[in-house]
Image (cartoon, rainbow, N blue to C red; front, side, top):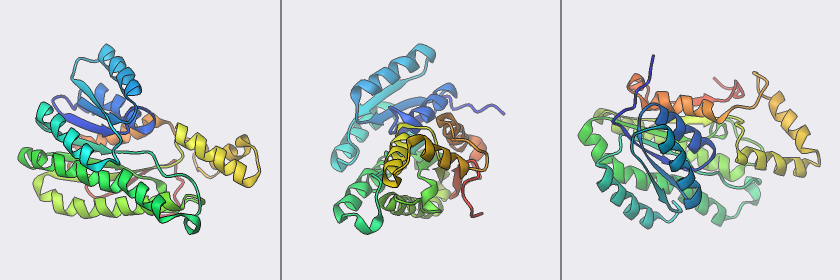
Length: 262
């Protein structure tokens, strides 16, 4: 099975590093045209240059803080007019800081929801008419295993991921009649800068070394290792393809078997 995304326009949020970058690279290899969205313009320009050196399709970027909702709507609408449509959307954004839910301030929840759920709704508003017109759409949300099994000391994140997951399930039923699928990828412990930061924070909270906390994380994963960003990219590329036309409204854990639930 060879996945071919040629002539498909894909919009990837958080695409300058980590999971978003890994997904963008796999999409590019499969032939998709890409609009990469992130805050740091210098990083986006570097990624675009690297992709252009390897592939011939269209690559563009949008440097923006997606929590600025009205600016996000305006800038995406401008890009939409240039691309014509987006068949594939990957909703991905950095997670909230560590901490217990009982200690979190309302402002932390508000900022987290603006950065993800509210921004994702803006993206949907912009891309939905084109997807409906094409009778084809793939909306993929990068959430977390915390949506199904709360992770200690990630109170705001667990709450947010659960909300995004439920939003996606609702959308999957509403949009399916128009040829649009909506699915969630639930990454486990994937080696990104965010995971390194979380492990460092948790190690300090416990009063142990970074290496000890890393070893503990690995011991919780049945396959015995931390995941690779490209493994999320493979999952997203499948869900973005025509092969996944009958896959809709699911939570797709990529976690090495970490989750205890079925």
